[in-house]
Image 1 (cartoon, helix red, strand yellow):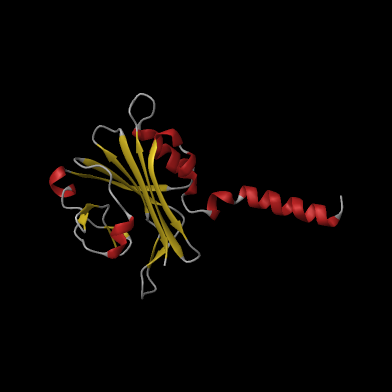
Image 2 (cartoon, rainbow, N blue to C red):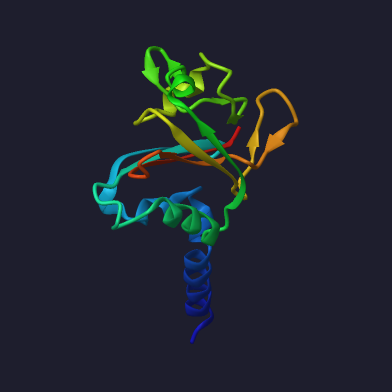
Length: 171
């Protein structure tokens, strides 16, 4: 092989191996895609967000644990699990819309009214379970040197048939 062909082969192979990290949380796009009802993503050079919603009609086809196992398999590390009742989740609103509350780029159900909330819709309500993950991507708090890497979330309803993934990274 000529050196140009070897170089092109090298680029192709390294690009294919590294594609999981080129689009933050992009691996979710191919996870049981037939059940994806909404997929919002804005990935720029300095930061981005992703919010994906699955509605699973038949819980025997796929269960919530599959999402958690998939996240871990893709390099996300489970940090903690929280539960919220409908009294709490009914308050998660921004501009009269249901939202997933992230404040200063960490989950915070006490903070409301931040402009980032318009990018993080919440597609279902009621009693919810939240799984928080360390993703390997960082989020930098604006105007500071502080960064966070616990910025991946899986939100599941109590029937375990409505699931959303949220990821916010960068500046």
